[in-house]
Amino acid sequence: MRSDARENRARILEAARDAFAEDGRTSMNQVALRAGVGAGTLYRNFPTREDLVLAVYRHEVDRLVDSVPRLLADLPPVDALRAWTLDLVEAMRRKHGLGDALTPAAHQTITEHTYGPVIGAITDLLDSGKAEDSIRGDADPGDFLQLTGALWRAASTPVDRAPRMLDLILDGLAAPSRPQT
Image (cartoon, rainbow, N blue to C red):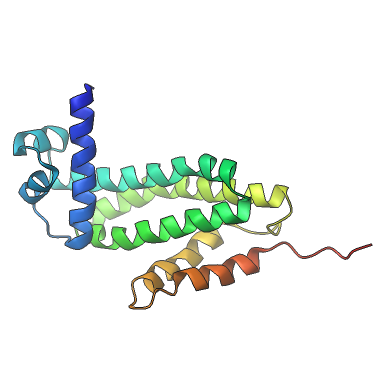
């Protein structure tokens, strides 16, 4: 793909993500206008509205999953998990608006395609903490993902309670202190 075509595609995805998060009924023409591309460019990249919404979902999940190695390189595992989870919560909050733009069948398709990579990312974060004994050994990625569902709802309230709630979750994940000898 040529560099200008890649740039157009990236602008379309970013514009669509923001537009659908604001209003799930956003039209394709509104997305093209917001991205600064013609309708032909938009439809060449995404023949249907559903194709565009699914691509926005996949792009967001790829961005989250791809951030894990950098976070683990830059931060201690618990801090990396906290930063990643707050990013996930924000993505889930935005995704709620995207959900309005999906048919039930498309929603099922995207869930099937994104669940594994998200669980893999959480596994990497938890395993890193388990290896350094900062996260309890029985921490389960599926359980952790379930708990984050409450966080995005808390982030959507007038007072964002998600960071405080995440601290409670992370406290529960802490490896038990070893008695000093």
